[in-house]
Image (cartoon, rainbow, N blue to C red):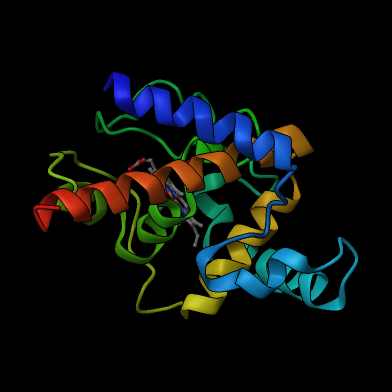
Length: 173
Ligand code: HEC
């Protein structure tokens, strides 16, 4: 755990120092070099905004504000849909986890991580293409202030470090 926090702190400061930009995602390496007003990025945000309204807004709110009183459990005892704006915790998660959460749903994602958790977050992998899921994430990120985007980029980097370490441990290196 201390190691994890240590590497998190290192990657966080590295990312902040480098001023990494938010659209750097595994599926989007080229996009890392795009200017803020590049047509590709704007198209991805526009597509993500439409898809968000169609597939996500009913639970996560038209303005990404989450369900009312989302911090308390719902009537069925399960967690409510949190906001995706900076008042929530979406930016605490790296791109890999966010992508899986949307594609596989909450329960399956967590159970693959060995966590038992009943989640009301449905799977969208059958309805949305990978590109569409990245568009939605790009749209969500585009609403965040720069420091929040930088924190999430650092989280993605930390997630990748942890994954590489886990793979190496598994291979006995
Ligand atoms: C039927 C309601 C519902 C819909 C529709 C829905 N979600 Fe969720 N979502 C939830 C609930 C409830 C949670 C909280 C439970 C959990 O975290 O597992 C959640 C959690 C999440 C999380 C993890 C928490 C976080 O902030 O990081 C992400 C990411 C997410 N949803 C993204 C989406 C996206 C993107 C869409 C649209 C493609 C969507 N959700 C559609 C109900 C929904």
